Length: 202
Image (tube, rainbow, N blue to C red; front, side, top):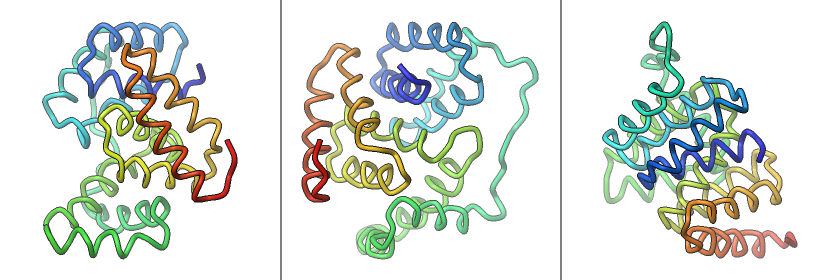
């Protein structure tokens, strides 16, 4: 597996609370000498999808296996998180961005703001992982959590940001390693739907 594939599978194991797989993958990351910051950012990002309790457990386990020597906060984006969020959101959603925010605003003005400020401005805009690596991990997470419309959007986001369809497909196929073929089956169904509409063959 490539580094981005390993990080995507690690992210899925984290949100699913599959501790055995999580530990095995963390040990594998250490053996493969994957940069600590990449592992950290992958797990930190999971709080957007599985909440603080899940991220706290995973990051604690990560620190047990690959300890942080000198803790310090990175990438504070408080002053420009909303603007950064809009930039990243537009990269992912393209011309669908305004409609997305408008639709969410209709049922929750707060969430429409937090999506930009918290999700994209504070977290996904952080350094340490490329937007392509983040999107692949998010695709892995949304496939196993089975959120169809959000998965479709992030497959679109990955593809818009130059992640080829084979890389996206491989990340989804790798989910079988977590012991439940339904994750891959669901993800590939959405994947096929997306690329069929793009007139791109598999």
